[in-house]
Amino acid sequence: MPPEGGCRQARLPTVDDTHAWGARLGALLRAGDLLVLTGDLGAGKTTLTQGIAEGLGVRGPITSPTFVIAREHPSLVGGPDLVHVDAYRLGGFAELEDLDLDASLEEAVTVVEWGHGVAETLSESHLDVTLRGYETRTVDIAGHGPRWTAPAASAALDDLVSLA
Image (tube, rainbow, N blue to C red; front, side, top):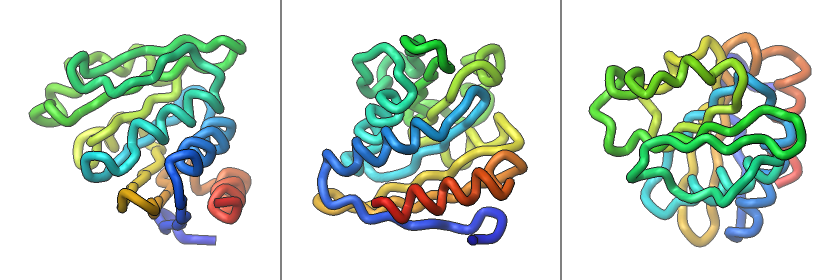
């Protein structure tokens, strides 16, 4: 089991694998969870989020929120909503804070693309997810804080990467 912040890695050979892995990740998530997605343009951040949305059972379509900055997708199955944020055009934490995500953070799963360095402070626990590559993706996932370092959640992340 990796230590606090320890990184687990999965290889996802196709776009469909990225989507399916995201759906399995989405099934693990609960209200209040924060995911910070990092990766180059075209690395699969939105594809992964589409899978997460499927796993959560929220209304779509899930598209990159680059121009609207944030979208909320309500649950269709009585679970948490999905708040999908694109921080690419934001100038830092102050602009992210202006989105007033605190209002929905505890009731929703929040996914912040391009959030590294600005979104981690929104919650005491979060998942860092880094996607690299275009043909075959490598995904690094690290849990931080009490939610993700608890034995059950840590074991669930271990299982998730072993299924990739």
